[in-house]
Image (cartoon, rainbow, N blue to C red; front, side):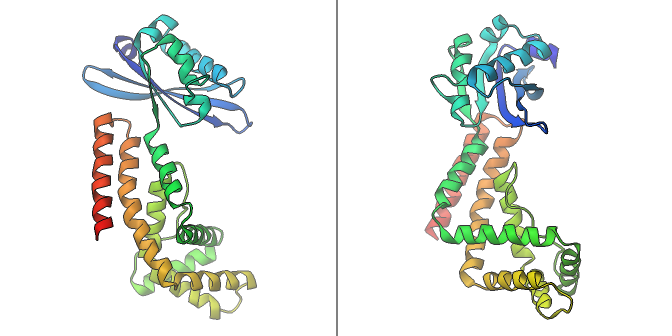
Length: 278
């Protein structure tokens, strides 16, 4: 990696903040560069940050590049053309953000707000006032926790799926580092495993030895799952999220290029417009 970076004419930095087990602020640094016609996105370091302000983060990033890749200030000034991160003001703020400090070294620097992150923020903003979306999301989360926290419930669901001849699919979490793809999987498992889940929840109502809490929860889940509007909206959400997940995954691939991401966005818009006209 060191030799490739030294031969590369241009480099881009990708960075994100995190907190470790000791509740210490860290910055994760990746470097994107091209060499002999191939594009590489490679891990550089997880480096501690004194304080989570733009100057400290910038210093931490530059220190990691100097220490791990022998890139001094002159080399960075000559090679750096791009910077990607989430949309936090401390990172992309035009005045006082990390990108503004890096532009002091490289005035032509282009800053990019993570496409996958922006996509998920846009989706959340679009559905924030849709009551049915909140209902479906909460149902998926509660079903996931209901089966995750009880091996007995998971075993019963597996048996119900076998009896129905359905795939053995367990409810999965809605959120995560790849939120849209996780939501897609959660919706898919919910709808494909719908019959087995409802069968198992109904069995809990009459099964002896079931706790009052589990019986009450299963009754509430069944009530929501039998609502026509909830089921139809879950199908609608899956259609939309499947399209958006393709964009998200394309943007997250380390070898993806800007034209590929742009093309995936155009294809998603075309598909969603077709859905709207149906």
